[in-house]
Length: 506
Image 1 (tube, rainbow, N blue to C red):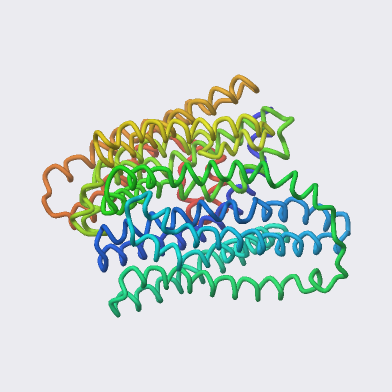
Image 2: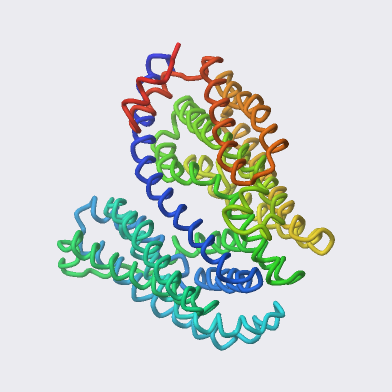
């Protein structure tokens, strides 16, 4: 592909424009997520918070079996039926999926409620029985919530997903949780905020969907064959099971070998380290279809992969440096000093997530877009297997750091596999001189930030000054090394015309 063509890839514009929408939603959701955890850690003990984490992990795992992956069929089949003018069938898919997941998720909820004592005994936490009994009602609620999300995708109304998922739910949850905790309800306050936030989000989401899709919902219903829906959804459900296990396995392992307060401390460290996913999660939903639509043009795919990799590492690297250098201070200030015990967890996960998201992320978005679903599934099994085996072996020996080593090992291993596979299959790689400049800028940024951590004793000062030193030095190094390209200017233009004019190119 010529240099002229590369400079006019409309996919770059789409990646920036759509990615910016999801980025805003992710930032708002992430900010509320951190705020809610900060609230929890100040009003309940680490043991109660750890019990909460274990209980919600069980719920999230159970709800995958409750919905059987069927909501994923909505944003696959409905757009096709709408494109073919078969609106009755599009409505039929939504109604059939909704009815089915209501039944299956309710059955799973009853089963979990009946077995809550067994689960509590397994983790040696008797209080989990009460938490699981109360939270079991959220399994069918989560099924409907996922149906609404995929329904928004299917009619291309992502802004309403942002309203429901990123605005309404966290706002209501935070307000209700705060009120209940201030009233002294403890664990019941955490449960109440979670349930009420989810219920209100579903109510608002349903109202918005009915309003925006009224023409579709008033169309005469045409039921479709169940087999294609199940055939498409069940394999993805199995993949989802592995993904959910991967996300919760650390808490299960820590909860089994250690105490609930260790689970709470580890959860805070994991959340801070995994915050680096926000840039990847904003671009990935747009990146995958951009790759899929041009997968026959390997040169264009490689160009888009390189642009995404540079932007992800360029934004994520300085954040990783700040969190790694100041882990103790950020944990102590954002939460409470007792959570500083998770500082090594933050450092390990920052490095691992940075490496993994730069080269395709834990879900292998590049491989998915290229159609290599079997490789994605195999990598997912490796991710879960490595995480579980290393964590189970090390947690009894070194504590919560063993779980962090397990996650970090799995993330780096799968990142390497993704790189090797896409290079073997299509000769694609992200390594260029421009990419090297972005990575190398992290060295002087680290050098600039280290003295602040070493010589300042105040955690508040470190939290305030460290980002200024690291990010300022990082940007200065990028400018000094002429690291910005024409594609960067086009990406920046979609976010801010002022930013576009500021970027020095050439």
